[in-house]
Length: 203
Image (cartoon, rainbow, N blue to C red; front, side):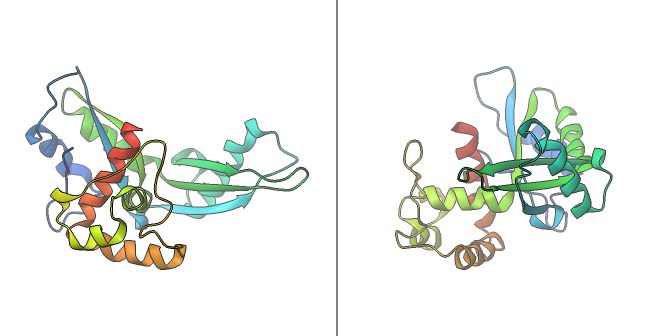
């Protein structure tokens, strides 16, 4: 796993640095194309939830979500990229759809800068907070390991069982999101995000 971080003073969403970083990145020995996973910072995203529209068939939910994302980003619907998941509910009850989205131009920028370097392809894009949370939950030793060990000593458990809590105790989402935000602003933040992205790519 290699971590590509923009030079100091350049935002990750301005990806003009990416082509040169890929040229210089070590490449796997096998496979004709190399997969790249990228995260999107919170300030470039919109996220939220909405009630599952019971009077609308599931096949039409993407259109409903697209409109919600477009409104949140103040963009035309055709100019947003998005993903969503629905939470199951009881019979006759409205469930919830959790969604996240960004400007389509941002993903297009990523794809264009990657396409400029032969052999690479964009495998996935997701919010950096989601990747950081996944990495922290799968880290052996939980939060203490994250804070006390150097990134090269981190070990992860993944597959059929992921630790439900970052430190083995009951987790308050707001509290842990605050902790993860602090980690993301520290030098180890990029490593944690990269670990979470790799775990998803390998799953």
